[in-house]
Image 1 (cartoon, rainbow, N blue to C red):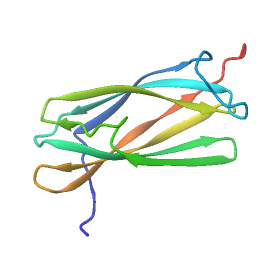
Image 2: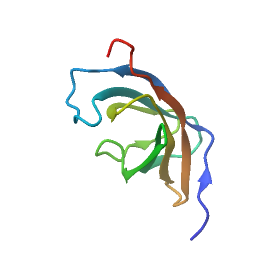
Image 3: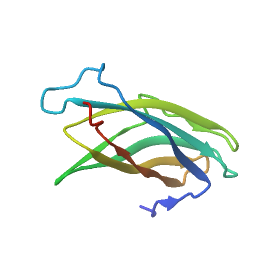
Image 4: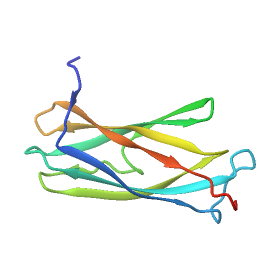
Length: 126
């Protein structure tokens, strides 16, 4: 298998992270956060996102989450297009998340782009 190339012109931005105590959360991880992500294709090639990998660090615990697509979709981004979505994650305490999206160009090349680290900080009042 050919190596996966990092595509720097496929940019990921974390638009916002919001503590949302009204969302369902299990007792052992009672702090839900909603995060808003945008993927902007500034490259000169069409890229279809096929999967993602998240690494969430919470104290001494590291959780790796992998999956197909993005929120059940496989967005195809032509040059200049973007895709925005939101999802959520539950934590026990403060956490930091980062990762990557994996895609394929119309030419058949596998590529990835990094998801920048972002913090999920439990408010003092929670």
